[in-house]
Length: 152
Length: 129
Image (cartoon, each protein chain N blue to C red):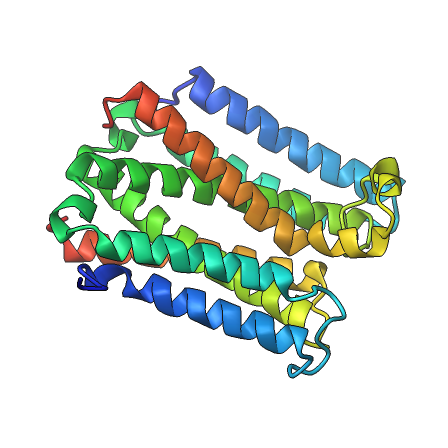
């Protein structure tokens, strides 16, 4: 049985392995200042998910995995719209930082429900929130444009 | 010279005038807040609005090619901006260097805007999408 049918997705395999190695190095405290923010388990978990995804996609034949024209048009529209959303979000965050100078979003009592609020502030840092908004926008807009159809 | 007075002109120009007034008021009321940015941005928007009002609306209707170019440029600009945010996040999380958002935010914004316009110019020049 051939392990890789489709070379397009080998980059995912490499990325997954790299993630797992970084996670391991983080856990074993090889990287300087490691373990201060994330335990490395999250990195390893992400690496394993990417590895499984890469293995699955690389086993599918090229003809099946190639996106058709409609999918490509939809993706372009979705991601260019997400670009606008992110740009607006970055601007709003910047204005917030000018008004209240802090590095994490002030969510008030929300952090009190966690036993270690200082760890959660890393998860809700400005950069993480931008990535989070981007992912949510891409998923929601893909769903919307799929449902809407007629991409012009 | 004929000026258009439809809602596409009046709403942005009134918003721009509001920005200028808000800039002047905020400068007076809050000494720590600099309203110069608002005043300059409002003035630029008024000048742009007056220029746009002199042209017919058909002049600004994007055709299919321009729409495609903008979508393609926005698609690539999104990935460039996402990469910058991810790299900054990794540096912030995994190294001892703490990058404050109020400095990095400007960088992300400028990279996003410049990549969009540069890529749009490039795809317009390249053609054959």
